[in-house]
Image (cartoon, rainbow, N blue to C red):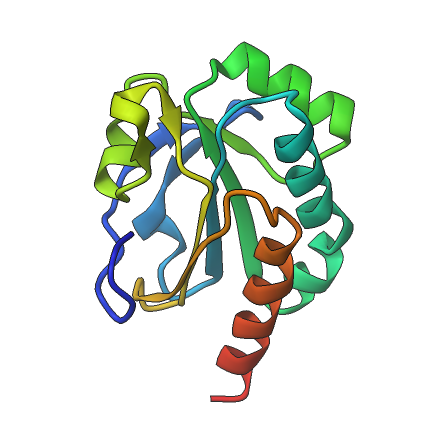
Length: 152
């Protein structure tokens, strides 16, 4: 995992909703939750995605945007986002470049680690969570961290 209190690597990507994304484009405007997950439509990843979905309005009220990242294609992401009714976009990292930047590549590139990064409005990593099996802990801990950022 990347170190807390370091600058989050910037990157460009196409989102599942068709929009273009750069991390730096959100600087000074929003906190970012960037969560890496292994695979669309698997049980753990579906539970994790829905846990972020279920708390999305609360995160939005805290000026926080959520983006999920996996090695799946944009088409897979679009289908997954639709089936789970996700209000946030997913990023297709088919070449594993983003996961490599964020130390999220696992098993020699076969899979992505389940890591959630909390990035503040200045582009600084304020939290890094790695729970492979406790998928609901990602939203719980991320929300706590975001709330603590609001009080600073």
